[in-house]
Amino acid sequence: MRITQKMVAQSALNGMQTNLRRLSDLQRQAVTTKRVNRPEDDPFAVEQGLGFRTKIKASETARDNIAQSKDWLNATDKSLSDVSDLLTRAKTLALQGINGSLGPDERQSVSIEINQMLEEALALGNTRHGDDYLFSGFNINSPAFVETRDAAGQITAVAANGDITGQIVREVEPGTDMAVNVPGDTVFTNVFTTLINTRDALAQNPFDPSVVSAALTDLDTQLDNTLDIQAAVGTKVRRLTVATERMQATEAGLHELLSKAEDADMPEVVSDLNQQQFIYQTALNVNGRVLSTSLLDFIR
Image (cartoon, rainbow, N blue to C red; front, side, top):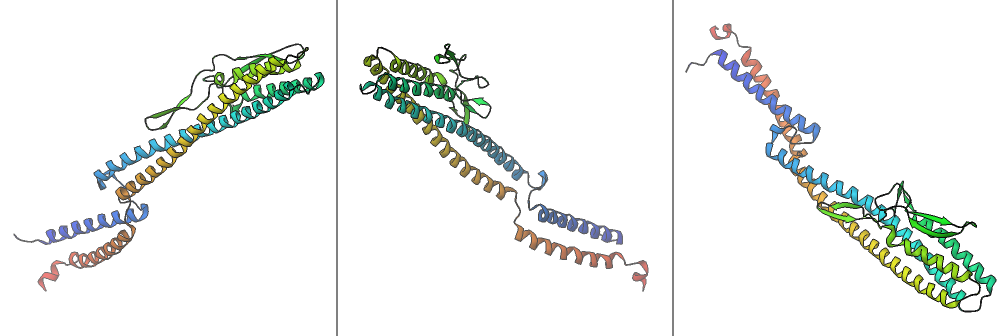
């Protein structure tokens, strides 16, 4: 086959284009630090990367849910701890009132202190976490409890403010749900009644120790119940902590796999880029001499 000058020129230009494309790809990798910048660079790696990113995003979403759930549970734990302290103090005061060493005035003072504890318990039952009420079930925008007061301003009864039995469930791991709230009726309803009864038993005249004794039994029951619920909350917090650590480890592994699929080997890229620049410059020089050959050069 006869080789013409046009064929030589076209071959030189094709080679230059190939070198230039390779040089452009290496420059792009050097700038982005990514081996895969377009789907056509490596379709399989692109598909892998999409899968890794989907899993990472799902894990991050679950960790966000866990963080919110832990905040909620920690706030709940604090409120329950305060309720336990109130009940423990109320027991101490009731024991003082029942031992017969206190006169009517002293028992009245104890009754007033327990009445203050009742007010504190009501405030705890209506605790807010941010803008949400902790113990209102699904009705997080409304207080969990409303009180009835007598003419003197004392609380005579406390009732649930609507349905407070709902359980808020969140996905805390992919495919795993957890109830993160404590419905107020499981803790506070009987606590209020017990504190009211204890207060009134200590204030009664004539004084009946058996009524205070019954109130003491109820205080024990409510304290045990509160501690049990608090322990369950603590177990959930620990479980979420372990889940967070596990997901962070999984995400680290996924990020490593994503890096292997998409990231460029920078020392290799720099070396290849320098080599390709040399090849391109050499090709420019050689092709410049070849393409500048004229008809006169052939007839000399």
